[in-house]
Every structure is written in structure tokens, then in C-alpha cells.
Image (cartoon, rainbow, N blue to C red; front, top):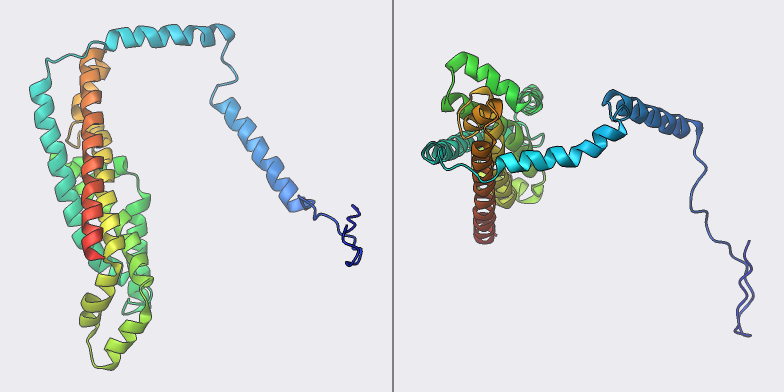
Length: 281
């Protein structure tokens, strides 16, 4: 214990000690930490990182350099197909997101605990949104490819379901966080539930809903690239063939195009989000 004595003669001498920085962990926390460390070690062995030899590690820079030499310069032979694929990708993202958001607004209303008309409807709506969100995009894409065949329709339906799972959850939370005072006041003067929602709840939750919608568009553009690998349309379909046939220069062109498209969509999305939130606020 440290003895801190005052230098002011008019003050009394007090003894104080610094509080301990760490508390002694209990047996449950200690067991959890040991288990977590054991899982990390087991995963380290399972990923074969520990089996890499010094020779393999030393050869990695040379392999990377060799791959870069095969990827540069990018090929311009497939540019006409790339332009068409970019347009198809953006169309998929726009239609899938718009329809997904339209479905998510009433679904978010039913999934909001304070606004849902019945507990069973609330549970069913929450369960449906969670189901759409937890199933991976690739699984939805394979499912719709089997139903409607290869092409952009399967990708559009996949992005719509993915948007419902993402936007439906955040719309419901935004509706629940709206102040209940104005809603009670409108109900007291005889306003209907629909009137209260459209005149009070939706305007108050508009900034959050706009943010969610804009981020849904970004997620749709990113997801559409991967969906093309399973035949669900978009520019991702152009990436599979050159990678399989090791035509790395053409693959580089596709990758650079995807990068430029994602950056452009992100910048445009940010500008529109600032404009829309500023006007709604």
C-alpha cells in the first residue's frame, strides 16, 4: 500500500491505494480461456499452417511474382462482353434491391414488437426475416438457378431475398426505436394505425431506412460478383471461365473492372445518402 502524504500542512494525512488493474479470474473464466486457446491450436493444425516447410514459405514470393507476370498486362479482348455484363449486374442489383426494400417495409412493420398487430404475426415475421438472412447468398443462388435456370433472373431473386433479410431486420429495429409519445397522441385523437405509421413512425425512421437501403445496394453489388460464379448472372460469370482455363490476363481485366465498378457505386451511394438524409432531416 502506497502512503501518499499531503504537502499542505492544513490538510490531514490520508492513506490511499491504487485499485487492482486486473481481478483474479474465476474457474469458469479460466476454463473458457483454456478452451479457447485449445480451439485455436486445433484450428491452426487443421488449416495446415503448421505443416508448411521452410522451402514452401521461401517459394511463395516467387510464385506470387510468376502469377503477376502472367496477369500483366490485362487483356482487352473481352471488353465488349464486360460492358454488357456490367450493365446486367447493375440491373440485377437495382431491381433486386428495390423489390426487396418494398417487401421489407411492411415486413419490418409486422416484425416490430411495438407495432405488430399480434404476437404470432411478430414471431412469424421475425422468423422469416431471420431465415432470409441466415441462409447464405450462394445457397439462394443455387436454389433459384435450379428453379428458373441460369441467368440474371436467378441473381435478381437472390438479391431480393438477401435484401429482405438485411433490410427487414434493420427496418423493424428502426420502427421500434421511434418515440412512442407522438404515436400515442395521434391514437388519442382518433388516428388509425396506418395513419399513425405513415405520418409519425415512417418519417421519424426515414434517415435510418435510407441508410439501410443505400447499404443494401452496396451489398447487392458486392454479392452479385460472387453469384455469377454459380451461374446467377452478372459480371461474375465472366470471371469463372478465364480462371478455369488459366487465362489470367483476361481475368485481370475482369477483376479491375469489378474494382472500378464497386468504387464508383460506393462513391455515388455515399453522395446520394448524404443528399437524401440531409433533405429528410
